[in-house]
Length: 150
Image (cartoon, rainbow, N blue to C red; front, side, top):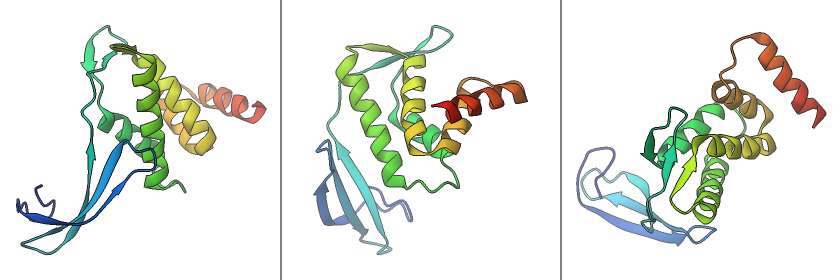
């Protein structure tokens, strides 16, 4: 495993733990060269899941893309990286359990919004503004009103 600080290939494992849901192993490592510590995750390679985008194109499901989108929505909010990772794991598990080979991107977006609404309302509105492509202030107001009424 390459060190993210100095790019050295050699490191030693200090600690290994299974994740809460048992789908991955978290390893704490120390670089042999610079002695800095970093964390890696090991997961079983899943069968490919294709995402059907709005324009009809298909691309392979990318959990990093999902993680980055949720992380951006939760920026400067009281949401921990562990909570974000848990949401990503839950969504990915639901998708792989429900859809055999392909899933529409709209379904993924709705699942993210459902999870964010329960996690942090500001993050929910941020994600919704990009996902639903708000074009004016009325779109924001409508979404906030819906949040208040739910």
